Image (tube, rainbow, N blue to C red; front, side, top):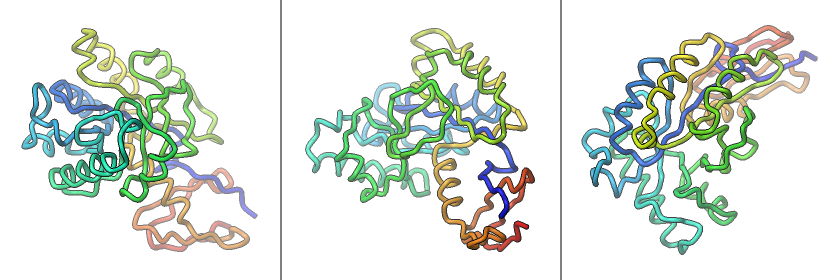
Length: 266
């Protein structure tokens, strides 16, 4: 029986994803930096607050975040663990509806507003079309989440960002998969007057051949595609019912399993 392990696209073993909340004006500069260095971000928006104060207006959202991911953050940003379930349902569903009209695609992710969630909320999310949800509980680790509805990031950008980036780049053991997940609010770079931090980070970590640069939903979908693979009982071949390719490490050889194809593994 061959030794089979999941690999990231093109056989890579590391993935970087960025996650920023609230959709304020500083996102314009942040998106520009991401685009310059090939970094992918997920932007969690409150549809009911778009255009208020310094928040990005509705008519700019689709163009600004093109190539990145638009995700939910509830309509009005309440502390949802303190909200009645009726309000919770409306806050998430109505945010999805509004953002999907703007984005033109299905919005399936969430960032918990104020970091607020509980067991009941997690149990409700799949029925609301939410497939992953990010917390504010930074781990300092590069691990893959066991529970995508309680997706803990590696760090806020204020917490040892460059140190963690250097550690991440140095990782070389390909028997593991590693993820660096950074979160924050773009307006914090204005408040702290440290735009040089994120510019230095993106310049340092961007453009590397062993890193997959992905949005939150791309990572979720990739793992889902892997779990959808249909292996023979002896793992001698596999069928990929997905539309997208999945890459496997088979006895230390990288094998692409194209969508809709069956591939021999021995």
